Amino acid sequence: MPWAILDTNAYVDKWSGVLPLSRFDEIQKTFIIRHSSVVLFELRRGAQTVAQRRLVEELFSLAKIQWAPLADDWWRAGDIVRRIGAAQHWDPHRKRAFQNDTLIALTARRYGATVVTSDRDDFEELRREINITVLFV
Image (cartoon, rainbow, N blue to C red; front, side):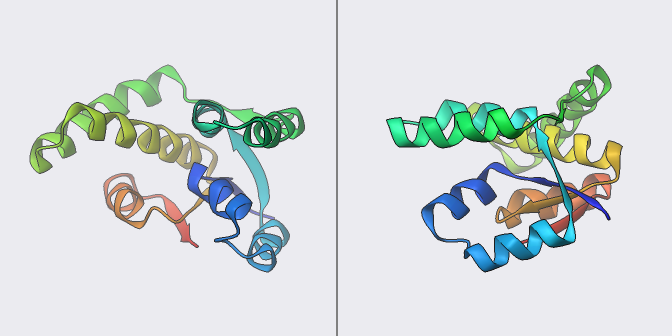
């Protein structure tokens, strides 16, 4: 069974009802889900309410296996973000957001995993740049 990393927005879409539970169940039947330390960071950083923090803490407690970017991933991400950001005239905030997506993509690529996301713009760019497999939901 293939591996997948769910991007931050896939969790947010599931929890907010944008991603139907049936679609989420289908993803879980198709892939072995691995957790990205970058995604867990983004979820924790963005959890504003007590209920949101509980959801993130529960996910973290279930995330027995976490994949984290390696030093080489950070090094390569710096080059990718610099080149694409310069070409598209991104401000520092936009580059930071793309940095995290790049780290998620490079981590997934290292393991041969699919990235499950609704962020079509960033991950189409990354799919072309580093040849990753992406499932858009």
